[in-house]
Length: 91
Image 1: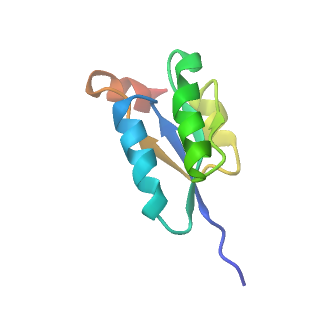
Image 2: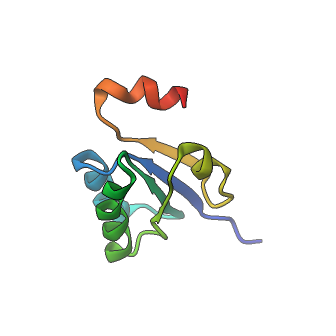
């Protein structure tokens, strides 16, 4: 019986997200399968890093709702700026 890998979606694409994505090289049985940021276009840098490091699919999502509905996303990493983390959790 093979275990499914944990699929993680990142909320935010700045310094903190990219720091965590770089550390993902050392994580076993988990992949960074999604990224969302506002504006959506800024998620491209984080998604490109995911693909460059081969730590997951790094699919760009346009909403948190779409990301959590994706069957490849099991958990969220909230790496948005401190001032809007509560707002992110309310979405």
